[in-house]
Image (cartoon, rainbow over all chains, first blue to last red; front, side):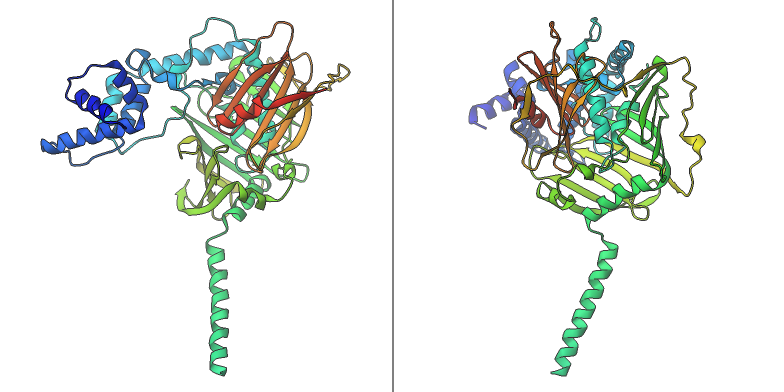
Length: 188
Length: 324
C-alpha cells in the first residue's frame, strides 16, 4: 500500500478526513483494514488504553454484524456478492410458487428482525466466544420481488433436484443433498 | 555377528509390531473415508443431527435401513415445516406438507459414487490432500477427524468427523479454499441398530389429499435434437461419468445432462433448448455449498451445477460448445 493511502487512513483515524472513497476502499481492501487495525492499536498503546485481551478478528466480526443490518447501515456491502441465493433450492420441489414466496419474505423478516445495536454490542463484548464464519449467502441480497416465480427459477430448481439424486449416492456427504431439500427457512 | 543379527531381527520385529500397532490406532485417512462410505450404506442407524447454513439452523432425523433388497432411508425435518424425504431403491419421495405436495423422482440410492469413477479412490489424492487431523468427541462418541483439502482453487474441501467404532459420519463441514465453512452437519445423537422397524420408514402424514408430481414417467424421445454438445473445459482430473437425457417438469423437451466428477466433487452440466420467448436465469446462484451458473447460446440455456466454487461452474458452463 502506498504512502498517500496510509496518510488518508491516518487522517481518517484522527477524524480529519471525510472522504467517502477512502472509507469505501477501507471496507473492501484487506491490506488497508490491517493497517487500520494496526494504527488503532498503536494509538491505544500510546494512550495506555489497551484492553486485557486483543482480538484481531473484531473488525471481521463487526463487519459480519453489519452485514446483518438493514441495508441503510451497510449500503455497499452487498455489491461484493454478485451471487443470488437459490432460495428455490431450499424448497427444492419448488413446483409451488407459493413456497418460493414464503421463503423470500421469510428471509426479509429475518434480516430486519435482528436489530443493529444488540448484535454489534454482543459481538464486540464477547469477541472470541461465538463466531461462525458467514457463508456468502446474504439474506440482505435477496431482492423483494412482486413478480411470480419465473420458469427460469423453476428450471434451475429442477436441475438442482436432478443433480441432487446423483450426488446422494454415498461418498463423502450422502445425506447432505436431501438435507438441503428438507431444510426450511426460519418461521416468522 | 550373531548378536548383530539378533539386534537387526529384533529391530525389524519391533518395528513391524509398532507400525501395526500405530496402524490400528491411527488409520489411513483415505481408508477411513472408504469405510465411512460403506458404513453409511450398510448399517442400520437412527440419528438426529443439526444442519447449519449461514444463519439458518435446522434439526433433522435420519433413519437408514439396509437390506438385501436395497436400502431404505427416511429424512425428517424436526424444525420448521415437517418435510420428509423417503427413499428406496426405486423412488425418492419428497413430502412438503406446507404446500400439500409430494414430488416423486427416480432413486439412485445404492448406486455408488465409486461406480462413476474411472479409477479407484487413490487417484483422488492427486487433486486433494487427505490428512488425519486429530480426535474429537461428537454426539458423545469418539471420532477421528479427517481433512480433505483441495490442491487447487476449483474444488471445495471437507473436514469430517468419523466415529471410531461404526465408522459412521458424525460431523461434516464443507469448506472453501480459505477454510471458511459453507455448510455443516453435526449429529447430536446416533444409534446403530440390528433391526429397524418398518414403521419408522413410513411417512408421518397420509398425504392422501396432497398433489403428487411424478417425474418417473417414461420419456418419449422422438423429438430428437440433432445438436451435439461438448464441455471443452474442466478442472484437471474431472472426467465425464454419465450422459443422459432428463425429463424436467419445466421443459417441453428432454434436457441434455452431462455429469462430471473428479472422484469427490460432482458437476452437472445441463443444456436445454429454450422456447420462443426465452426466460433465462443467467449468472450465478448459490445455496450453501452448491453453486450454479447459467448462460445462453443460440436459443439454448447452458447451466453448470455442483458442489464446487463459483469459478468452476462459470468456466465449465462457458466452455460448452456445439457440434453438428
